[in-house]
Length: 292
Image 1 (tube, helix red, strand yellow):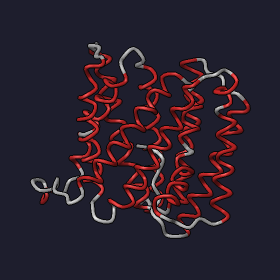
Image 2 (cartoon, rainbow, N blue to C red; image 1 turned 90 degrees about the vertical axis):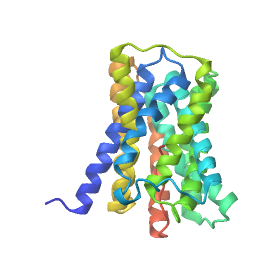
Image 3 (cartoon, rainbow, N blue to C red; image 1 turned 120 degrees about the vertical axis):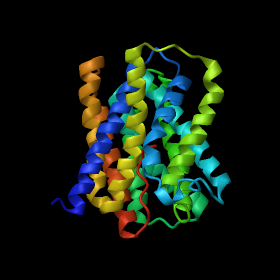
């Protein structure tokens, strides 16, 4: 029999595989408009959520007293994911994934601003290290004037507001309800953007869209379950395997060769987010993983 910790590790590995699959497909399906990708991600991503709803609440699970905060979480998440999709389309895969690891850095900063949290020397040091790492990663933005590097930063900022809202929602709302309203509201928002463009997919491309949506939905559920079963300090480092996936598939599919400065910057960002995770765990704070 596997222990709770071992099961949590397997959940995290599964989450990394699913998120990596979603990222690769978003980049691969580059002939489709981003709004269409967003719609497909959340249309098919809605399916796994229904397996989490308790049978005795199947007709009442949707009731909530916090619709405004759910809407704020959904809008923030939608902005973050749109920015992520645009970045994946236009930047090396490993660069984008490395920058998403900076999410906890921005959560720390915005927690100080909006939640009046007190941050000690360790977390301030982590924030500083993380920003130095980000500068190494986004160097092409200054050298080559590649403005697409702003989009992973937008993702991190949007994720920060998602994390702050989840910290509040989780005090009164079950995980399946948070996931349900997020998915449904973003799906509705994506419908509003569909007039911006739609390409009819082939049968194979439709299959890839199904895989993309299910991968994104299942990844979030596995991630949540992993953090529920084990301490964040145990499972959090596993998510950095996604960088190895990005390096491998970025080179194998798109011939992307990582630059030494990017790898060094990614290392600094990973160290920074690990310090923040460990510190927040020691303070018994809820850890919000940097993906949506």
